[in-house]
Length: 346
Image (tube, rainbow, N blue to C red; front, side):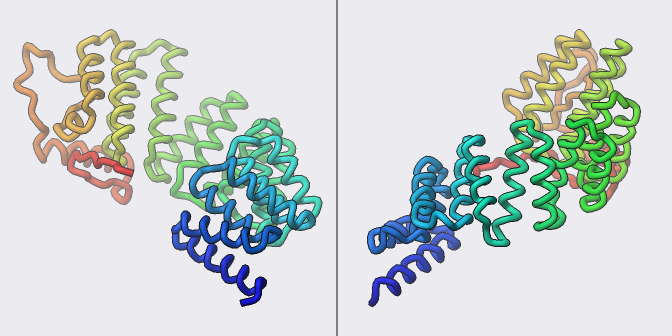
């Protein structure tokens, strides 16, 4: 077999192993290809991709650098190097490499991703003007992309271009109407303008139209706590507790969600000077799965003198709680899990 045919076969086999998730095999074949032809950029690219899958970013960067050396006039090679640098938290170096890729020119399928990632890096570095420019370029090539819209809206907000930011937030609501993201971004931009009542109205709209999610409940809880700092009415603490409780009914909670809910409830009870309930919630957080499955409630229980033995809620009580959540958040969004928390072994 001629060397050219041999190297092409090795590269094809490495790529096939990679898409099948056989990353070690892909890496081994790529190394064989490099031995056959040390000047083949695709061989180094395959080796770099495999190392990226193993999160060995420093090694991947070295392979991508070799690919650049092999083909210094190919912008795609610079893109892969820049992506690895960005993933390795070397943002400044990544931006410089992406700029070189843009200068040389990349293939159409890479160019949109280049501008998108470059825009996201600029956003993270608080270079909001540059972020907007690059994100708009990416949008022109890629089309509608929620990640692009999200960062573009927030960039406009940080630049003080609130009207443009709200327009983009409304685009997100249009393209993802059941997601809370667009409402949350609109809320953040309104808060930047101290339009607090309108920000609260945005959350209320989300309650009616978007699927319940943990971010929504976090914002509702934060809102009640912020209101307390203004008027010192302890009713806000009680409402915060109600939202913490709702978050465990309206969504299927992960174990960490349950722990956070119990700890947050304990902190609120400390502010209410209710040491017993604070201690109960902290105790539940120490064993969240059993506490949740046995029906532990963060709501205020009867005093110990009057209370009977603590038992798991009846099916009727569970149904009543779920129905209350359904009434608030819509039948299509509620899933009764029978007070179960599922282990995540991943």
